Length: 266
Image (cartoon, rainbow, N blue to C red):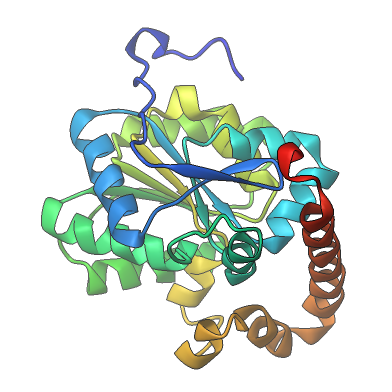
């Protein structure tokens, strides 16, 4: 974490989420509905507190165990939500039932819809230059009440991080949407949080590609049965099939280990 933040004396206090959480695979996941998440997000913006949102799916759980640095970055978020149907399913199997899946892209749209009414200032970071421009244009069309505080594509080196964080700080955004792949997304959010000073930081992954129409989201029936990952694989089989095969298999193995743990060790 940087120690030379220019606004160190103006650090936003950490937002205290008033929600119950459950421990899944050693990760504290908040037991929250979409509405509860949005209420906490708005409260953080109104009170000028810092709220970093972590999204959890099967691949993220597996990669957090493989990469302790990623685990630390995600766990440092003060609101961690179940983004994947597999995580919600696992919570039910383990007797720690979460109320619902809150997909990152759905939460993004919920924030923008809320921002339409409350005039949130939103900074969009990530994706290619073309997709970034198209995504911002779509946001302006669909949510004209949202103020675009700034935008920047996601192709930059680690050396550029400080300048980009300062650009975001200067924008005085209420919400930062980070459309960068893991673990770079989580690293950026955790490393530069004290400089950016944005009340709400939400990592949205590939959501800008969906907004821009570059990638089609799975139909609702696929989402309902937890098959959104399969729909993505069918769209980009060469790039994604091996990734999902490996992470899904490892996730099932982790779930099996949790099931056979003695009760007093869970």
